[in-house]
Image (cartoon, rainbow, N blue to C red):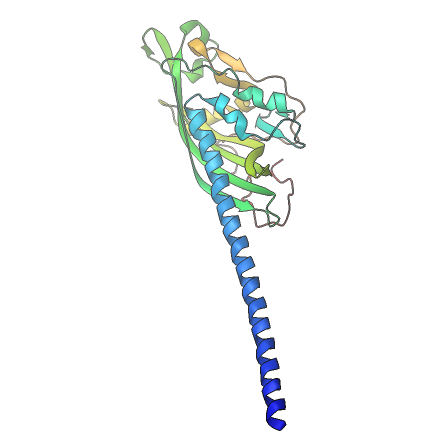
Length: 265
């Protein structure tokens, strides 16, 4: 009788240990799956912005439109200058519509140094990037007279040359929508630029007003094309490098977070 009781006790203890071990393994598998999902999400978010930049560099902005959240999504926003920000779907995507690809124009924005965090709830993500690049093209001499500091002294094919070094920072919020990551809130900070023949320190001193303008790009024959009217003013201004100012940490790289907080205003 005593042997039977002992065997039953051992069996009960073994079953309890087995149940506890299964529960522990189940928790470990769930945690590993969650970690793998967040790693995959981060990779998808980074690929999304890289795809954006490849298309933008090739003047294929119409293909960028599907990378944005769909029409009617609350909170959509884009901001490029101090002239205002865009909070309506149509005004946001207008930036990508109808862009020409003029002969002789070269844009090469190379993004680097990403810091990407996916929310613990898996619904949103945040990322910041640095960009170093070049922007260049040809402009009708009559058009160039309005912006003399922007151009090189010589002409090519009878046209003025604009060839710039440019550095920017990007801060972007992403939203998971219908199972895919989409661009939701987009902000570009121009950090510095300079014509090829001039350093960015001296040019920075005379370029402070440029970020307050609503210039979007130089189109056919180098004619300036301006941004559409903004939906609302910017809540705070950003200014490019100046030899009289101190650099600051803006935007701040995202930290791990549970659920969305609007930090890139």
